[in-house]
Length: 145
Image (cartoon, rainbow, N blue to C red; front, side, top):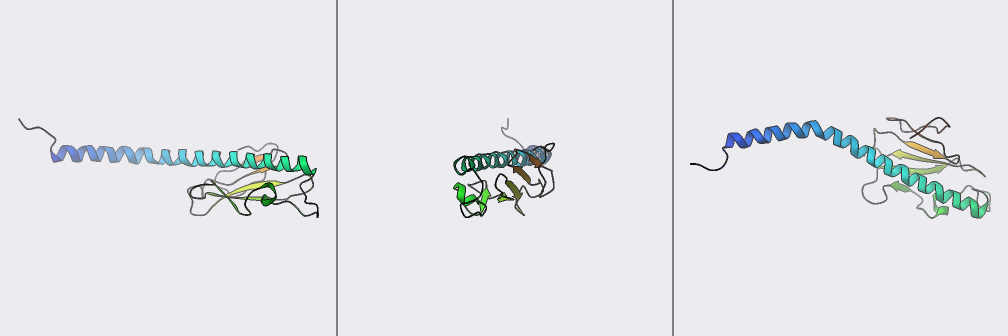
């Protein structure tokens, strides 16, 4: 009696595995994109907390010379990319800084896995937005992540 598998049986198993992988892989990629987006949104929320701490100490989001603060003023790099470790997926920008206001935006980098996922934003009122497929959005009281 022979023991083992024939070449035909092994090839059949490989074909079945390939079909299963082809069916599951797109769902896996979607899950990974969603996870990376949630991680970046959490980082944006942490940056918002740093901005609020700055205001508690200085009573404004402007420097002593009247110019708007930057990410550097809250202890971050001038050009901030997320995630902080590994391949960057989003560029973070602080804009529309006023005495009592600011806007943080996360724009997906071209040629990254997040490129078609859409950018998101968070402002000083805690309003946030994300529109799948669009690089930019405007936060409002009715928009969400």
